[in-house]
Image 1 (cartoon, rainbow, N blue to C red):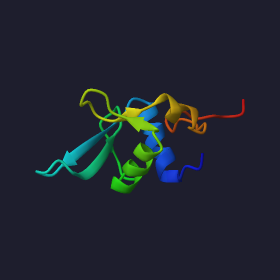
Image 2: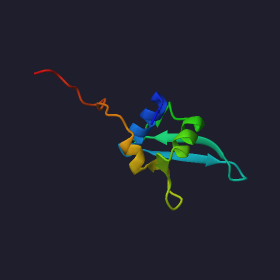
Image 3: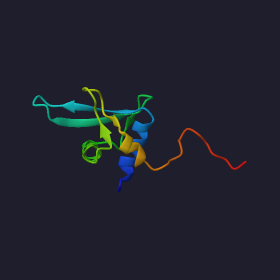
Image 4: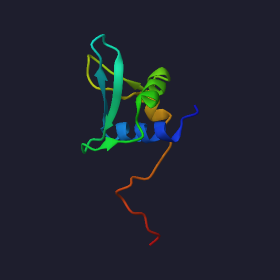
Length: 91
């Protein structure tokens, strides 16, 4: 599946325990999507367009009114990426 860099970054944050929190208007429509990492940092790459495309591809889902999290299909389609907090050195 073809996934953009912004979508990859969002899926990585979600796979590490993050969540997408939605802000809705009075009619129930989605106004803003905010991706928050497990450490509480806001991901700048995640916007409404990224949220809608991930939801359309069924890579993220919400259960019982909870914030959106990565699905099993999202984990399968996730490309491997080194964790930014670990340093890899050739010993």
